[in-house]
Length: 187
Image 1: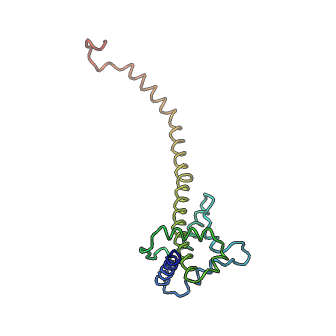
Image 2 (image 1 turned 135 degrees about the horizontal axis):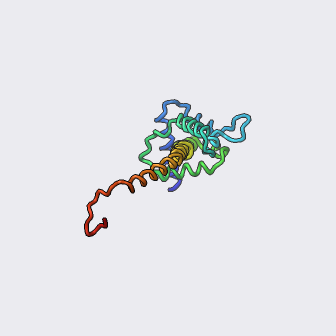
Image 3 (image 1 turned 30 degrees about the vertical axis):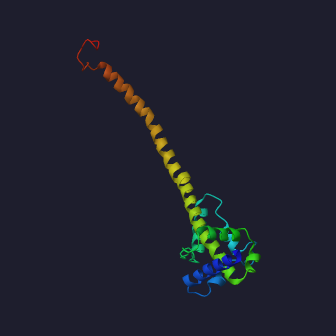
């Protein structure tokens, strides 16, 4: 029974991927991500899988490029409402834990379904990671710099504030009392 459900899941996801992209090369493009380019140690899928590790502007630019590269497959827009999200997540987790040669050897509807699930997962994850990196950059690079600058300006005005408060204190002791003498306040 489980095998029948898995086959139906694979056929449904692969069919939705084919219907969403009229280009018949989509399954071939997905399989091409499993190949290791010349001079590289990792497959294209493995490269797309890796999140940014540094918090710099260039890392943020690379994170945005990664979002564009994954988004070029246009699999995030697939309408898979008939498939439970936990099944898609389980399929993506399986692919993320598998090696590229094993995925290459998988039968056709299963391979397309697995690569579709992992690309949808990677697209959402890449966007989240780019937004997180943007938030960290804004907090550390921009806001902390502005905070330090305003703190420095505030500290530079303290001597002037101290001088003004001393003068104000002297003038207030010389000024006549504005409150009348009562039994509650001494004269």
